[in-house]
Amino acid sequence: MRLSRRAHPSPWRRAITTILVTGGAGFIGSEFVRYTLANHADYDVVVLDKLTYAGNLDNLRPVSESPRYRFVQGDIGEATTVEPLVDGADAIVNFAAETHVDRSLLDPGSFINTDVYGVHVLLEAVRRTGGKARFLQVSTDEVYGSIEQGSFQESDRLQPRSPYSASKAGGELMAQAYFETYRLHVVSTRGSNTFGPYQYPEKIIPLFVTNALDNLPLPLYGDGLNVRDWLYVGDHCSAIDLVLHEGRAGEAYNVGGGNERTNLYVTETILQLLGKPRSLIKPVADRPGHDRRYSLDCAKVRRLGWQPQRDFLAALRETVDWYAANEWWWRQLKSGEYLDYYKQNYGQRDTAAAESARP
Ligand code: NAD
Ligand code: TYD
Image (cartoon, rainbow, N blue to C red; front, top):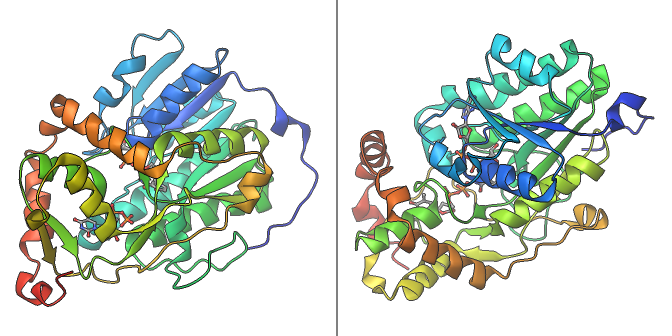
């Protein structure tokens, strides 16, 4: 997608003193809050989060005593909640989303509510308060769809293939429409698969690490050869921070870790790091519409001066160690609603069919 470049009205570059971080109690959002408070000594951070199953105030415990941090529980889809917070902010970074592809296959409606409509409500609040604040939409590499060879550039067509990625594309396109139509200062980042501490144990890395710690099966979809480009959460946040401050309005920026690995490789590495047997791998029926490979060309964000700092294996080892040392954090999450979801998603998979795809 090529976006037009026009002069920015002056309010767009106004200095930041208060950042509104929506979805800041989730995995990446909470890291961004910690990152911002540590790296911008003069910024205040307000978190707005609905505290869905994925939102967790334990993620924000390290900053809970900071006088520069404030938490508000609420929904980005509720204009009356959102508007006063947007009015008091110089920048909004929107992490709030339903984020899990498998859940989007079971219940697409909640994804449209938050990832499309919620983004619209936030943008409308920026517009109604005079367009003073800059707005960063945290998007995903999944908006491009799957690619067999080569890498996606920002100008490539968006071809999302799951209800999750279609909703994220909808939200991002809405944000770009507000740049074109209302001249709001909007940028977006398209990050790749992210990993690190505090990730809800439904995504592959925290799920497989915590299952392996309990000697439970690791349900590997299909032939295990789908490829994801892994990005450490701290590197993802430094890119978002840079694009927020230096990105050009109306533009999208790819943010990839440059670590393309098959799911089988990631699974085997986790088992090796934990000293667990390969027999814990359980091939299960593939995810419907499973994207084969994601790959990003990140030259554009690199031109802004960003590059990932963390080596994949070292960061994975550190992440595995964090889950091993912080059972208090994840064990309480693997109960109640989580177990219902687990049964719904994994219980129905045709393991007999999957046996034929054993890696
Ligand atoms: P997460 O699921 O851990 O956290 C999402 C947060 O949003 C939770 O705290 C949740 O309570 C909150 N939330 C959900 N609906 C809300 C609503 N209606 N109003 C207010 N808050 C709401 O997600 P994450 O992995 O931290 O992802 C954050 C963002 O980054 C998402 O927009 C996601 O699409 C994007 N992203 C994630 C990855 C990844 O690999 N995790 C990669 C690229 C982009
Ligand atoms: P996931 O962590 O759900 O992220 P995304 O679907 O957004 O890329 O999945 C990463 C990869 O791991 C994806 O190819 C699907 C695969 N996967 C499994 O094989 N088994 C699982 O139980 C999960 C959750 C994912």
